[in-house]
Image (tube, rainbow, N blue to C red; front, side, top):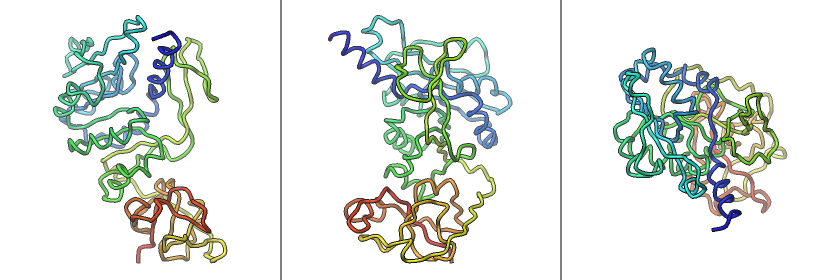
Length: 312
């Protein structure tokens, strides 16, 4: 394996290695404090040396009433081949600071490994930033093992069949603190910064801005539903029906016609404003078994839609 190939492997493994800012964690966790008392928290896509998730829970261990904190990190094998000392480790913290020293894992810390699944089975709540490229698999694992969670993902995950079915069944919802815009994440020192929206701070730490991130959780924050002020009226010319779905198409959430009561296909970002007292969540192309897999208008395929109907 030549140097170029090794570099490509290393870069591929680092694409998902984003470290969430402490301020973003604090802004979201404050809504769920009541759920953590006497619970075992597992951060299973973490790095105790740089992770702000681990830092947050150590700092707030007593305040949140946590019983135990487990944190495991992923160390890909290619880094060993690159002669970098990068051993997968974990911490198992019970409030005793003598237990904060990272200990080596037997494997590479992949959340799918049996070693990490064993930790998962001991936990009550998972809080982490999983690899965006493995988000479907990560969500499926959490529901398979019936775990509560608070995790960060891309807004497009709303449309994944592995995710939307749980949103539809009211088993998962979006978090409270992020509804638009992008967020800045720290990345490893050797991360290939080739995209727009990156910076290096005065200490040499690298950061990159990621668009369309959201919190996903099983918790109910018991917050008031967001207000969606709608001003547009329905006309058949502006809101054509799909060729293969008995519903009108709405291009932007703000353009939902306030005077239309039947089925509408709206963008996935509608979920930032979903109020079940106003609109019923009916499904998406997957749950409705739409022919062709997507909605079409005049033979042209449209972006993925969520289908809603006004509550009567």
